[in-house]
Amino acid sequence: MSTPLVATNSRVKEARKLSRRSVRTERRLFLADGPKAVEGALSIEGCVVEVFATPAALEHHADLLAGATVTLVDERALASLSDSVSPAGVVALCHHIDAPLADVVTASTRLLAICADVRDPGNAGNVIRTADAAGADAVVLAGQSVDAYNPKTVRSTVGSLFHLPFAVEADPATAVRAAQARGLTVLAADGSGEVDLFGADLAGPTAWLFGNEAWGLPAELAALADHRVAIPIHGRAESLNLSTAAAVCLYASARAQRT
Amino acid sequence: MSTPLVATNSRVKEARKLSRRSVRTERRLFLADGPKAVEGALSIEGCVVEVFATPAALEHHADLLAGATVTLVDERALASLSDSVSPAGVVALCHHIDAPLADVVTASTRLLAICADVRDPGNAGNVIRTADAAGADAVVLAGQSVDAYNPKTVRSTVGSLFHLPFAVEADPATAVRAAQARGLTVLAADGSGEVDLFGADLAGPTAWLFGNEAWGLPAELAALADHRVAIPIHGRAESLNLSTAAAVCLYASARAQRT
Image 1 (cartoon, rainbow over the protein chains, first blue to last red):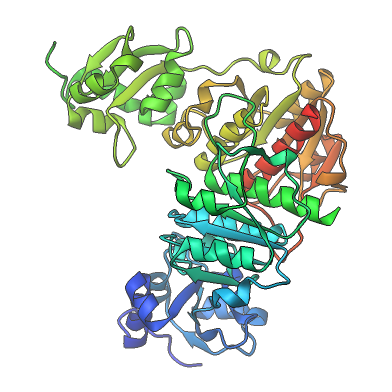
Image 2 (cartoon, chains in turn brown, blue):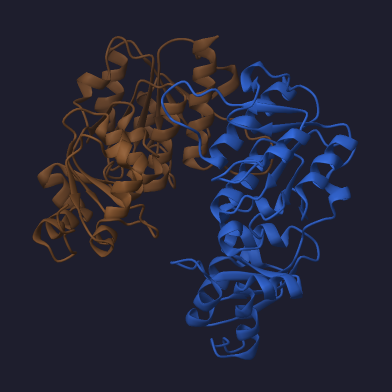
């Protein structure tokens, strides 16, 4: 077995630079941290360049890493590649996996989530995880949304980043029009929307449009949607957390489409 | 107008000690940070001891603070009382507001959320906020759940901590039995539950039992519930985030109870 690389090793240092969005974007590479993310990455052909693992993690995750290109690193080097407070010992260096918009919004798409300017990594990751759970076909991260490859986003998807296709689209309106062109009804999640979620017809192919956690959807973008849909608020709360609202909407669609 | 107190002032120092759970518990006091929380606190008679405010915030929130006992503090003193990265200038020193279990679980309770060992402040706060939005009557924080008065919990309720009654109960089984004794059907949210959420009869008075974000509900506690209910997972996600799952369950109940 080769000697584990240390934190000052040039390959480890190069990989560590991927903590910066500009470097990730330029190289189209990112780090997938922890066994769940590594497992997801390895399930996609051609995604993983190499897996950094400590000797202990290599032993512990022998099944997971069988057949993978593994580079041994020491504990400190591994920790320098992880933004977790308690790194699990495996980090995969991966190629970007987002697909063109036209590939993720197709005539067979039944349920789609479009995030417009969702800025919090935990929220974006949680929307991707929930979209996966609800059986959505794909996710679009549009506008000024957080980088899908941000370590916090990747972690909060708990592997779902690798489970369903996603696209990155600078202009949210383009994503909305693409969905409409493929026959999807676009529903803007909007606390002041004119349609009550539980009165909405959700049986057909649907794209949900979710806005920024603080200021919601810009009026002109919401106006592009076919309907603006509000989750009823029965108590005195003013609103719901963005990813919470997305979950209620996506599961209402899953229920309507599958019964 | 009096001179604003500085961070080394003894009253400010005493209030600052409330960042520690042990001090909050002993004194049955806590800090409510930001205009939304202060507004909620002021809406409950006898809750607020005094509001610390900067001169600028006092001017900006004059309507909110009209009639309140306000203590002027300088920016640094205010920041020392807030755990927010950008303090909004108002922090209320409040009496604890949790009620006895028998007062929040009554014969007229229709929808209740019981958190058993929910440890993350953001998750617990988000469950309280969602319970409020879904029109739940009350929340019980049971077992080793995070302190309801933790600043992060208070903040993530976005005011809802003050909107619906809640109880703190050391033994989750006691909370379950109290709900059953008042005629509520107790449903354990459990990924491996025998009942599908969207096939469940949710029209009657219901108490939802939510477990720890990492390990879920202990088997013996889940067994006490009347049914164990799973949210269907249609994709490849292994599970849902705790507060996301709670939102899907609570809104399924709200929908069934109100139509």
